[in-house]
Length: 332
Image (cartoon, rainbow, N blue to C red; front, top):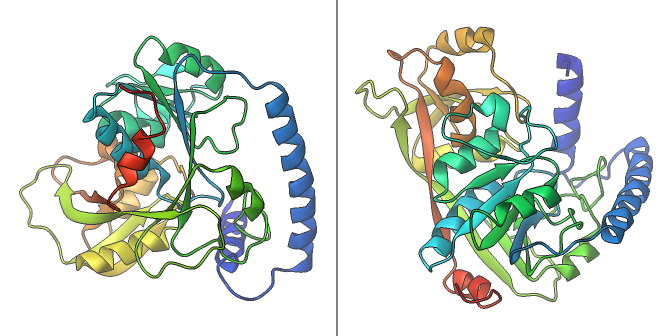
C-alpha cells in the first residue's frame, strides 16, 4: 500500500472513534459491505461442519485492536493449568503459508507463519496451527490436543463451536457504523449469539446495551525487556514503534507504565519490516520499544549490540471469568 493510501486509511480509522457522522460515501460503502457480509455468513453456515474436538471461538465485532492475541495467550495458559491440552488455530495473517494448515515450528520465521502466529507459538504453552483453511486445521488439531481455540473465529461460521467469546474494547464500538464508515464487522445485534462478552483494555468502560453479562479483562505493560540483552537500563524516554491495529493504545499503555513517549513510528498492521526500516529506526535518537507482535519480525534483523525493548504484558482477568469459560466445556 502506497503512502497516500496508508495516510487515507489512518484518517478513516481515526474518524471511527469520533462523534461526528461519517461521510456519506463511506455510509454508502457500508451498505455494500453489509450485503456482502450477510452473503458470506449464509455461505459459511451452509457449509458448517462439526470439529473433531470441543472448540472455543475467540473473536471480535470491531476491526482490530481488541486485544485478541494476548487474550488467547492468557486463555491457553489458564486452560493448561486446569488440565486441558489446547491447540490454537489461526489464519497466519501477514505470512506466506496460504490455505493449507501448518504446525508453526520453533524455527519458522514470522515472514512465513505470520506475526500473530509466530507470537502465539512463542508465548503459548501449546501447539499453534496456521492456515486460512481452518476446517482442515481443525482436523489436524485432533492429533495434537483435546480442545481447539479458534483465533478470530466469530465470523468464521464454517466451524461449529461449543463456546463463542467476543472481545469488545472498553472504549466501545466507536460511531456504531459498519465498515468502512465505522469499525463494526457486523451489526451490534450479532452479539446476541455470543456466549461470553469480554470488555478488554483499561480506562472507562463505554456502556453497551447487551443481554449478556459483560466481563472485564486487560493486559497491561509489566516491564520492558531488552531482546538483545545488552545490559542497558530500562529507558524512561522511548520511541514507540508498532505495526498493529489502533497503535494509540500502545502509546497510552507505555505512558501508564511510566514511559515518556518522545516519538512514534507507525506502520500498517502486519507490516514486514525491511532493512531500510531497520536503518531508519536505528538512526532514532531515542531507545526503541516495540510490541511483542512486532518483536518477532524485528529481532532477526536487529543488530546484537543495540538494545531493542519489548513491552511485556501481564494479564488481569475479572474474578470468575476463567470459571465461567470452563463451566461450558467438557471436563479435561
